Structure formats: C-alpha cells, structure tokens
Image (cartoon, rainbow, N blue to C red; front, side, top):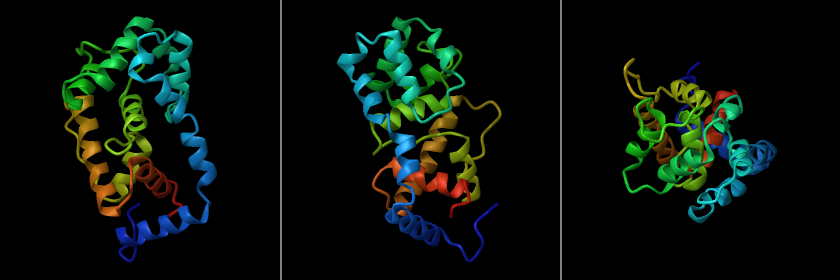
Length: 195
C-alpha cells in the first residue's frame, strides 16, 4: 500500500513527529531500544577481547531483531564471535567489505546465525548517526515510499544491505531526523499503518 497522493512524504513526517512528540511512541521505543546501552557496552573494543559466551548471548538478545537465530549464533566458537564482531565494528576496511566478510558464505568472518538484520542492528547501536536497521519491516516501509531498491537475484547480502542503507540515508536526510533510530521508528510506524 502506497501513501495516498494527498499524503506526501512531508505529511507523513509531520504526522510522525506529532505522534512522537505526544509520547504515544515512548513505550514501543523503550521496548525496542531498551538494551542498546548494554549491547554498546559489550561491544566496546576492550570488552570484545574477553567477551564470554553468556555475554554474547546477552548481546544478541539485546539487539532489536528477531531471536530465531540466537541458538545458531551461539553455536559459533566464542573466539570466532569475538573476532568477527571486532572486525565488523573496528576493522579498518570500508564497512561494505566488513559486512561482506560477515554475510557472504565465502566471507572470512562468517558466523552461523548472522544475517543482515544482525549486522545492521549492531552497526546502528554502535553508530546511529551512520547506520540504520535493515529488516523486513524497514523494506516494506521503503517499498511503500517507493524507495526500496530492486535487488538482483545474484546480489550479495552485503550488497543488499548497502543498498538498503543508502535508501535509509535518503529517508533520514529528507525527513531531517537526527539519527537512524528515529528513522527506524518512522518506518516502523509507516509499516504498522500508524501513519
């Protein structure tokens, strides 16, 4: 369902800002982002070096993503989890390459149970000024706004993530949102037909 012709992007943003400022979204926002500080703390460079499997589970549970891959994620060795998350967050390669290394079947830092949602959530919590969440809900909202890129059937997961990030950057910039957590709240509101 696309916004009606009368409902421009600007109208949707204004409606969202009114709802957000009224406090109506506080509970759902709190529920989604309540563990971000813990995830951020556990993913600090010095903490990753000694991350335990229990802490890795807390990190996964704290991400605003579905939890159906958690047991698969925890089947990786703790050494691989530490090394791969460190590379994603602190490696010197451009983020597209870091994401590819985690998401592609041939990637050197591939972890079982890690997908675009995991990578984007971890990047968003680490730097919400640069990265947004990439998931089915976001893609449905982008489609509704006619901003979802068309993916090639052979396109890598990292390539799809990059193209969704580019669409999120356009939404964030056009709406004037201060960070990508707010952009995600806007897109979730759009997907849930709150707007």
